[in-house]
Amino acid sequence: MELDNHAEDLASDLGVDKEEVKADLQNLVEYSVPIDEAKQSLRRKYGDGSSGGGGAPSSKDIGDITPEDGNVTVTGVVLTAGKRSIRYQGDDLEIVEGRLADETGVIDYTSWEDFGLSPGDTITAGNAGVREWDGEPELNLGESTSLSFEDQSLDVAYEIGGEAQLADLQTGDRAVTVEVTVVDCERRTIDGRDGETEILSGVFGDESGRLPFTNWDPAPAIEDGGTIRIENAFVQEFRGVPEVNVSEFSVVSAIDREIDVGADATTMDVGEAVHTGGIYDVEVNGNVIAVRDGSGLIQRCPECYRVIQKGQCRTHGSVDGVDDLRVKAILDDGTGAVTVVLDDELTQQVYDGTLEDALEQAREAMDQEVVADTIRERIVGREYRVRGHLSVDEYGANLDAEDFEESGDDPEARASAFLTEVDA
Image (cartoon, rainbow, N blue to C red):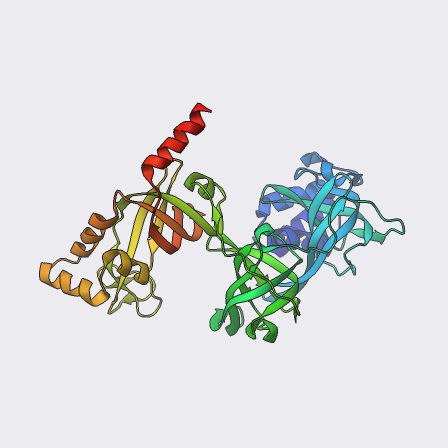
């Protein structure tokens, strides 16, 4: 059923204006709320007794708001407020996102109307909708929300303005401000929502570490490199790790100070790293217990560069494959296991040969699996220090390695230190 029909049925049942219901329903669906859940939420909001709700929205402290609340009235301080453009049903919509706090807690919000919010404002939002996002409540401010600015400010224990370091950023953060060094930057052409679009992508760094970025409206200050300040960025997940997104609404400016990019990766046990759900720059140590199928000499699609099987690409069909080298090794440290993926350069190091050497070995043996067997003999059972970017999804944990070095630790000394710690 089309959204318009859902809205008409709801408006008829609830005795309210169809366009108002449609706007609220569209807001919820836009943020991936299932249509049945969205309709139940609106029934609670407009007081349909059959769904257990009704009456005027209750005033609540932010710390007491739960995803089960239909609509509420809250007073809080705007910590951050940043504009962003989204596409819905072919139309570009501008929304304002950020965080709101009072003495009891903090909550994310999305404003579908431009109320003129600025960091530091103390506001009262009446009839603010509540939805669940990533397991937490979030406020939705729309046409049915009455919003007023208070003269007396609240004293809250949260920083106003969204200043953050890269290591503190998490997927879903909005309206953040960072000062970074452009570590790496390239201009690329992608298939965007309006056809071919040029973007900038690369890596930002600060004293706390590094994160990848995408700049959707190429900013000269980013492309020129150096140190920059970015206001109103947001963070999305890309390949399992947080990524800084710089939009057309972000303010980018060069700054006159040096930023020393942290050279050390975060060191974790494998189990601890996997439990994060994804981390951009991490170092783990463990033993290679196996080399998976699909390692050694492989072929890739010349169009999309994905690995192909028997000359077939899942996207482009029958293709003439391009030869390449890769290793997918299982690393285990006793706390967990992860698949470490080595690119062609690292694979050549552990194979101790070039792509041409591998092709020659495969021709002589009349079997390309001989290359993977050679790699297995050289790395399985040995301990390695691996640094790279970890992603975790329904298929498991994968660590795209930047460094892959045999551990120089003395196993006997480490075992003695461990036993001393246990005895203590």
